[in-house]
Length: 91
Image (cartoon, rainbow, N blue to C red):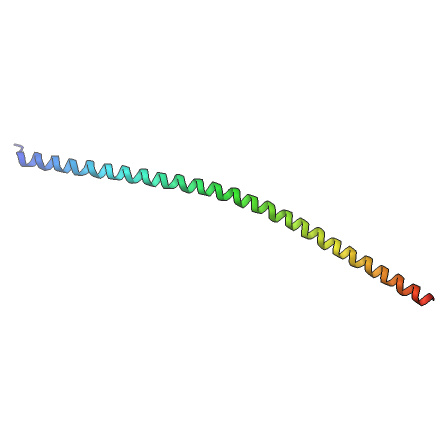
């Protein structure tokens, strides 16, 4: 025989489990929303990182060109100094 008390207890257990399932579903929705927000943030940061990498590469090229020009200018100055020294010795 099944007693009324046992049926009530099973009904309460079922309600507790259903409430727990609903709570878990809400928690899953919150976590999925959080993950979506983080993925959006990650995408925005990747765009910013790529932009900064492009700027860094351009600045590196500019610095390299400036260093090359500085070396060439230094060499040109040495040649001109030697010419001036040579001309002053000839006089």
